[in-house]
Picture 1 (cartoon, one colour):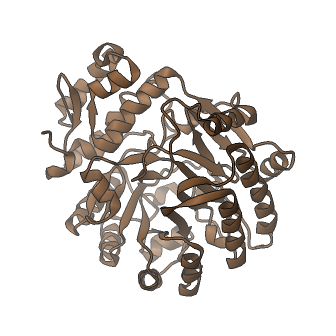
Picture 2 (cartoon, helix red, strand yellow):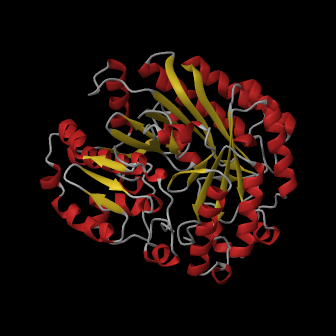
Picture 3 (cartoon, one colour):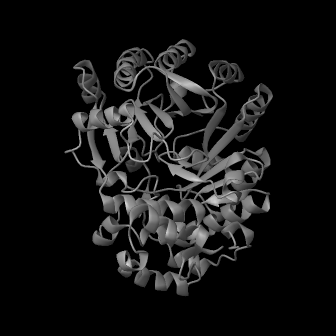
Length: 469
């Protein structure tokens, strides 16, 4: 019986954190979205939908998940790298919902009405930019086209600055059972520096209301590496968040890429914490949340021991999709709305990134897909390997060899040579039958997965990714 990484208590050193501080993908997919190509468009996406509808997918028809992107925000957060539209004109949502309704109907026409959906997530932007009636309309459109399974996970991202207890009650009545609060940091100076003011007490009161209403799960997002953050200030935020006892916590590293994301140009680079402070903040986050009783799920996620994510990790049932770690088995994912990413069988797709392009395509009766990817045999093998490492922390050679008809040691000869360095660092243990991520290695599982990324190994231009630390 092998030891799972969480069975051991890791000892993280600043030297190790610093040594592994490098850019790398988060592996919500493999290949990653930066590898999508324009040769995959509406026709290819429609063909993938038809294959699902006909039951022609190899390995059977997987469960179905839906992601809905609502791009609108009332104000800009300077750190944000999401696809968004900043406006205070709420009437702009009406046109968006009209087109979104058509896109939903187009999917139902190809897949057939009432396909069963086990997971539904509203992201953005700010989904709660929509009014109560607009959210109700969108849910009605979805329920007309699809059937939400009993016990389906129905989640929505909430801006604590604009939500109220009354609003949360409306969300519950519409069927949402999970909330995600964007907190990022509780320090007032940091909040001013990133243009997102939300006092601790207001977030606390909103979370208490959510508990009283009966939401099954509450998630809090945090970011370290923001301007004016320090180890001392971030330690206070970690303690404050832990005291609120959200069911799940996501701790992300801020990636400062002002050349790609215009809002970040309002952040002064000289206000960003230096690398050694970032390392300390990551250590504080990991140590702080574990010290407050949270289970480290993987990479940047924590959960209370009784949360379904923690249970899935203990039982070896973790999965990973474009929203991060999940308890749901590999799902086909329909991405709805501007810039939304989907997965259908052995393909990935992404919708148009601007409202004009998105509106034009759907109104002409075309799926608004502008790029994507049909996975090759090699992609599928590597995806299986990377997801096993990212989700289970263990790569069993036999399971990959049987499923994909390869000899691991031969197929990945160069990769096993590259693993030697990580093995010497104590991040992995390599045997004749498996690669086991160690207790310490679990905190750097992205670095382990990167060894098997063919695209990354061939491409040394890595500034497109956030840093591991």
